[in-house]
Length: 481
Image 1 (tube, one colour):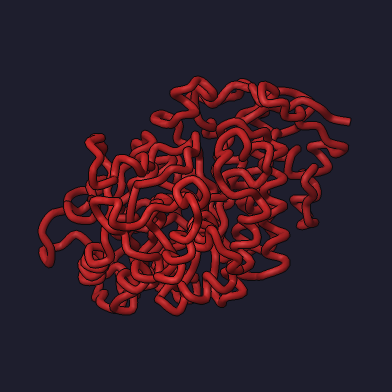
Image 2 (cartoon, rainbow, N blue to C red):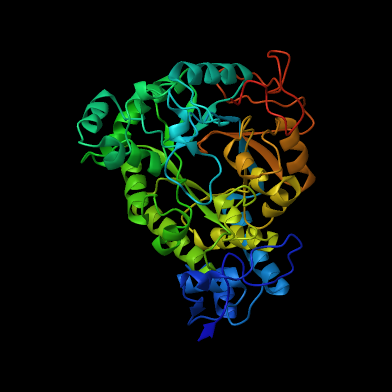
């Protein structure tokens, strides 16, 4: 039996950026140990045999029998994953013209990995607490989307804090207000308590679903918030949101889908079972969903492997997952870092192995994303040679990672994408959110801009048709709040 391995890292490796030191047993997590060997796991991966959790654990650790990531073994895993990527999806690298419009930072959940939220109390009308947060009423959300459509954007992603005044609809307001102590029992205060009314979830969906845009919103955590205090099924909640304009649901709020990890980093958040149930409800309501994993904090490689199994099992049952998105933990401004629970995020070697093993393990999910927001351009491009085939989107505004300490900007133009993707010998492809529509881009036929959007005509996103904006890494002036 192999044993050893580590936590968010596996002990010292060839990292030059200082990944987290092995410390998982501080939380009574079992040291990763399997009945498999790295060599057998790698052979199965190369042969296309469906991998087990033990196989994935060995590959993520480059062998649990010794600490640290072995650079030679790591390259073997990356090679196998890159070969699988070529066989399954070819040499295209896709991206989307999108905008983030997060409605509010008000939240009382208290996740220790997050610096996006502001205490909801600070938003109350009689509060004198200073904060840098925001709440956008539906009319403002609509204006942001309309402006983005004029630029050629065709996807709007909205992921927001759990504002206590947020309710699914007016009926939900009545249900929540009927509790004896709504604030403590169901995290609810009426909209008039706050300086700005966020509207209902249905109103926000209607506001952002304009002009033929694809609305990607309502995480499992938000769906839980939109049904709190009721016996409403997730499928019914997502049906109502879809009727209001929701097109697909992001599988964020996943973090690590192992409850002993969630008990440490987000004890106030939904459990793994609820996350899965919400995703099943979204698919049952006719929506595509994505899947994510936020790694590199306190979890072990075994937890990462178990998380991948949850995703694969969900896809076996539903077939609704369009992509897997690994999210490297950005630590600098988070409570986990400030309280001394972690001293860094994952190493670059860990990033590469997570992407590679995701490609090898998730044999039923076609697309794996690399993130320039989390990793920067150069490392993001490296991840495209580790099994990833998608490179995110233009974003235009990225508040969550930047507030946590992200350093790689909030915007990428089509010109940036074409230059970067062709530099590694791959083909740049503009895609729709659901991956069902593609447009291969000729690098020599510039200037480059989106063409798949309802108002897109190929004009570069930051053009004279609007004021503001700037170079890559600088978002348009009015795309953020």
